[in-house]
Length: 53
Picture 1: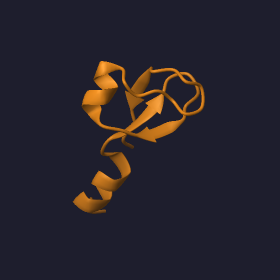
Picture 2: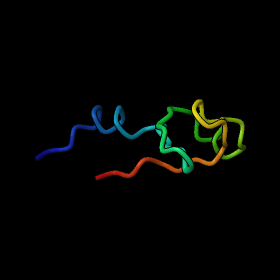
Picture 3: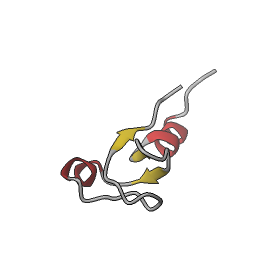
Picture 4: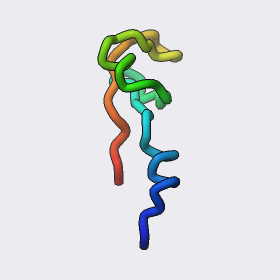
């Protein structure tokens, strides 16, 4: 199956997962690296990129 770039961007670009509660958030990568973004659910700042299948 062909990968559509628009769909890949929508599903994976700027989406991060909280390492504590597995909540997904869309945020700017620079803000994630600086620790300015906090999880809405558990209020922690530990994120990882979403895994591509």
